[in-house]
Length: 307
Image 1 (tube, rainbow, N blue to C red):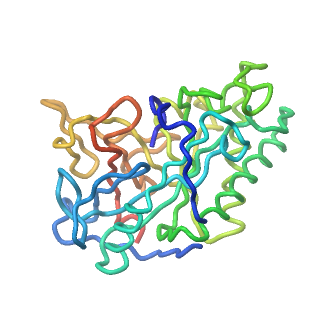
Image 2: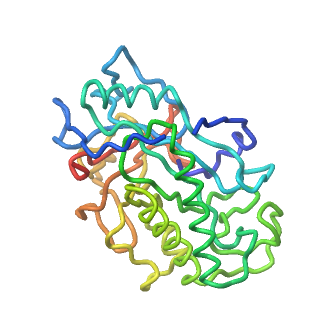
């Protein structure tokens, strides 16, 4: 995921047929290293070798899961820029075949590309309106996943600052004259207002479905939106991080460790959590914005933690 530097896809016409098959059972497979971890991909199509059971490109091992974008605030608001979707039906089908037929990995998960309070068409600066804007996006997400064959029980809120039009910060730190205008009218969004929106999103998901709530972000982006105080803390929320990353697919991680030459880097989470937390579930270790590998976005998934 992580949209920075993906402006070439803006405006791409992607139609998502939008049911849910929520599966709580996930399986580690023989050959995982260490046991309980899988590799998978997210967003745009990645060529995954077959026949089934499907295998990971480059790193080998069984293909352990796919995470696709099922909605985008800018698309909902009718913006002419930033209105892309990143959902691969091919990767979904491969991941679901491995999961349903061979009991490998997680199948398919979903994320929603969130707009912050600053791109809410009804912005008034209040926490109540921010919570309502979060709930609206949650409602749309639940509608979108109904026929996409989603098997993973966590729905991901993608909270980032992509650096692309119409809102480089996705409305998390600035308020715009209208959602698609690209014109800033206020260069500040209070942390408590941002957090109210996330709370509204999370509360709606848990009240209207059996899904759990997760967040995709990083330890640099998260505090730039929510600060470092109480508004930033999410101790009981599932997390998917994209820090650190590498362009070298042959230097893939073992557990939460990534070897870079003589250095060993560990997955870095946010909101008060670390990789040892039971809520740390995924790590996009290659392919995010600015860290290209020539193939796509690659993830490590702690499958055992969602059994």
